[in-house]
Image (cartoon, rainbow, N blue to C red):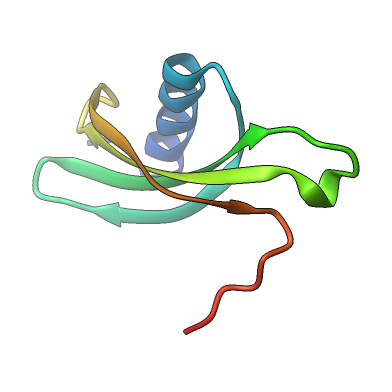
Length: 85
């Protein structure tokens, strides 16, 4: 089984390859029975100024070997938006 950091690196690579967009970073890591669930934030649309960029959150599942099992976009929002609880 991969470590959390290695699984996260693989998830970022997979999302970048699948979407053709730049990953901003990993915002969630969770171990599952079959591998890892990694949440990756991606720059969907670059704008000027940067604070107007559109970001997206992708939920990925990678197996114990780091292979992509699934991914999907779960959220899309402007960079400066404050999340409300």
